[in-house]
Image 1 (cartoon, rainbow, N blue to C red):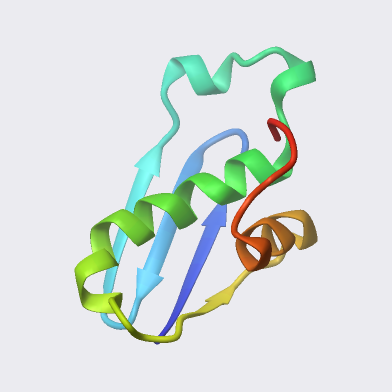
Image 2 (image 1 turned 90 degrees about the horizontal axis):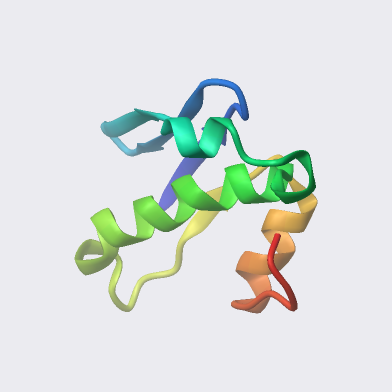
Length: 86
């Protein structure tokens, strides 16, 4: 079950899952995070998490194929955990 996510640190994020999709603008709080708390992985993992919540019941007991262009995010997803805050 392939799905794809993308995010922009300055605008928002989106997910495409088969013929369904969603897009969301970042909140003012996200847009004004201190530079020390911003990372590409943070902005990439959020739409992935949202997609998992939205599609969770449909994906139960199925293998997912996430198309991701950020290696850190891919490592977090593949391991199922992260060592520290992104």
